[in-house]
Each structure stands twice: as structure tokens, then as C-alpha cells.
Image 1 (cartoon, rainbow, N blue to C red):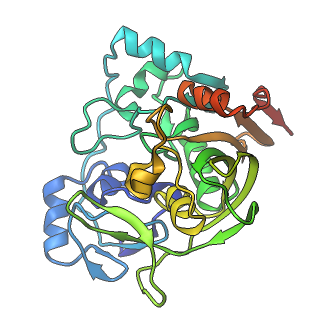
Image 2: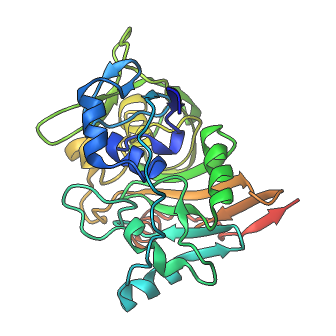
Image 3: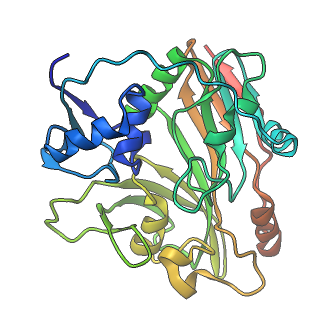
Length: 326
């Protein structure tokens, strides 16, 4: 094997470098990876990095010739608590031979990390159904974001779906309740973002002009309803897929933080008498189906957003059934 260069996919942003290697090269041991990092054989965008470096979508990883190793043994199915199994099965809104679509609950982490004990990736064996393999993640949602999450049921389907997300062939619609009312009521946000370290961990911020670390971030938005400039219901369509893009764009570009988003909106993001959970929901996806045609799926509002919609008098349309067209 010669030296290779691989680009980080859109759905892989914010993944630790060692976890990225574990996903793509499961036979490579952590010790071998650490040695290659120490000697500079593995680099990201030409720079030396650590195993815990968080990747950005679009970055290029230098991969040296890897040591020969036997193929990994098939992963044994993990036991999943019966209560968790039932909760996961209740989230399924579409299932076919290639694709599984969930209505991910608010508060459920998609992958593991510091101080995270239970997460979706660790329970995917509960969603095998009639398949020989566990489903695979092809994109992610933040822990506190609810809504449509797509899984692949086979390796070939995973490759096609991941390519669709990387190539921006997937149309995404999010709903958010924000504090305040955007002016103008609709438009496009084109605000580059950067990642910053801090005492409370990493966060995303609006980039300063000329910042070489900045990544372009674009979001289309439209106001669907509003209440006397106190709050508004927005439809958000991310054109790019940066970490926390919608949250930063609402707070920084529109001046209207998403309700209960204390991380980016501070105290101004909270309103007395309303649920304290993030009001951001992945409402719908339209994507190429791995077996051909197009799949359209949508998820109903989570309970805390239903409560807020009722409080403000926002009337959400009925959630359409999944639809596949040729």
C-alpha cells in the first residue's frame, strides 16, 4: 500500500482522528496509530496532529502504508436492554432492505464521548431486525437535536448514502423556534465559522475576516410564523454541514438564538414558562435511495416543541408519510 490522501466527509466533521481511523481501518491498533502520529507519518492538511484532534469536513488526511493485519473478527451483537430496544424500535419511521430512518429523540447522543454512557451507536444491534448486520451511521445529529436520522442496513448502502451526504445531494429541512423575529423574514446566511477551544470545551464561532481556519457555512432561512417579535418559527435549510452551524447562524447572523440554546444564546435564549430543551428539530430529508429513486421522510415535532407551538399558537402541518419515488 502506498501513501494515500483521504478527504473527511461532511458527515464526519467533529469526529476524533483516532475514531476516524477506527471506522475506516479497523485492523489498525491504537498503538500503531500513535507511533505514526509521533513520527509525523499521519498528518491532517499537512500538519502534525494528535489522536484526539477533532476533524473538520473537507480536511485531507495523509495515510502512510499501513502494517499488514488479519481482518477483524465479525462484531458480535451487543445485548441491549429490553426497555431501550422498545424505545429504539418506536423511533423507526421507515424501513426497507437498504435504509432505516429514525425519529431520534431529543437528548439521545448519536455517538459516544466524554461522560457519555449510553448512545445510539452502542445500541444499533437492537435495530438489526431481519438483517445479518447491524445498521451503520451515515450522518449525525447533535444530542439535543431531535428528528430524522438515516441509517444504512448494508455496507454498499452505507457507501452510497455517505457519498450523498458528502456531495450535498441530500436536502435537509430543520424547524426551530427562536427568540425574537428575524429581519428580513427570509434569506440566505453566508457566515464562515471556526472552532475555538475554551474552559468549557470546544465551540463554534463566527470567523473573523481573513481567518485561515474559517470554513464557509451557508444556511437558507424562512419565517413560517411569529408572535409580536417575541418568538418566531423558522424553517432552516443548511447548504453546508458545519458543527452547530444552525445554532451559531441563528444567534450571530440573525440575532435570534434558538430557544433554550444557552451555549450560543446565553440567558437571552431562555423564556420563562417554556421548556428548557433545545428547540431545533430535523424535520425532513430528501435523499437519493441506494437502490434507485428518491426517498422523502419527515418526523413529527418532539413533545417539548409541541408544547411551545401550542403556547404561541403555531400550527404545524400534518407529518407526511415516508415516500419513495423512482
